[in-house]
Image: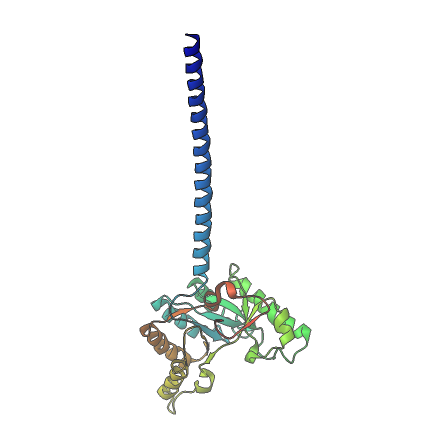
Length: 270
């Protein structure tokens, strides 16, 4: 009997050790599964985040300079909204804060429609490759302050120099991404009306063709929201872009995570 008891005890010990070993292996397997799942989730999250930063399909950024205009800026925002599109409005500070005329209501309107607001300049009377440092600094900072006074939540990441003119040193030291363009509508050349004051259809069509004849995915399009012909041309351009399968987005949406302060962009980098 003594031998049998020893045998049973040995078997019981082996079974107990086997049970403990299985438990430990199971825990390790669960830990490994958790780690693997966590890593997969992180990878998926990173992929999703990266995909959100990459525009899908045919996409262009539409930009408007020199506003906001009390009437036309709002009308353009309404046209964009019809298609679920967004644009970037590079505003002039003294047209926001009432020093020239009060465009604050228009600025707030476009921002609340989901559009982006950015810096153009405060007076639109100096070039950033000619003025002194103090004047250059005031042009940017006063425009920023004017924007934030009207839409405090706005993230102001971009600036466009007046006339596209800025030194390389000022570009590299700028606190904002410096945005140029790859398609120029030249709408300012064709802002005139007909001889009897009617809409100049020929001018409107020229603006449209200046854009549509050269646009391609990744472009940044330059227009000006202060002209009536620009508004009329915008209606046609948006429809044609929509019909051709384009998505129209703000510059920050176009560039995504690529956008860096102190860097100049004319279109989406390849």
